Image (cartoon, rainbow, N blue to C red; front, side, top):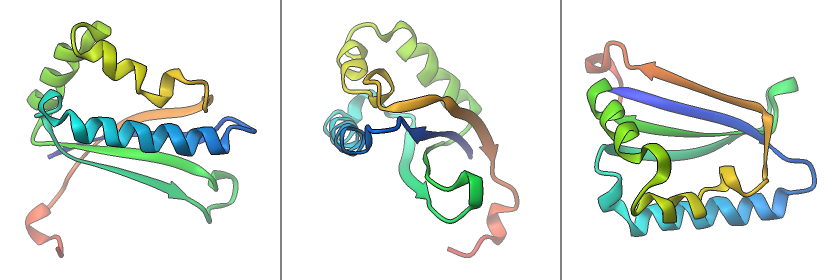
Length: 117
């Protein structure tokens, strides 16, 4: 598995709008799952008790493998076709993220057969 992790802080004074946009985005994605077949799961979190890192929000996308990750990114590139509507519902473009705090990482699972689930 591969996990794409994007993190950010909310733009100051935009807490209510951020919450509304995140809910709207999650609902839109759920309503259009056919556009995101490579996404095995999508999870949204906030971190509250971590000193200077407190208040960070992050989304974790799970993909079967790197090929699925790359396939999705290629298909969505440029936000053409049905992804034009996706972009209109993406909070990233709604001025609610403090973009100076944003990070994007990919994580790969290790020893998953030994995980406790």
